[in-house]
Image (cartoon, rainbow, N blue to C red):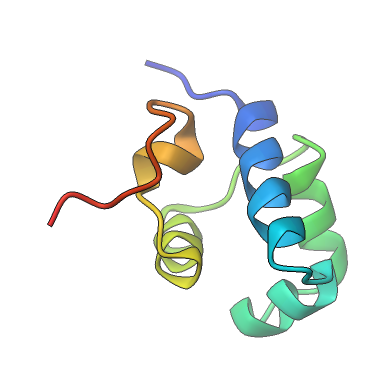
Length: 77
């Protein structure tokens, strides 16, 4: 199954804006340039697996939510 970079980018941008964060703040957390986050949010690049896990942990959502496999944000614990 191939995941849509567009959906991933939309989900990350939604999570970021819901918290009132700037792309540069997320980039700083991840140790990236702001342009890297912008490219992910615009669907130009998909995040690497380690970045995906870091974003899921940061926003306290499941990786499946970010990937668009589910609309449920909760993590099954």
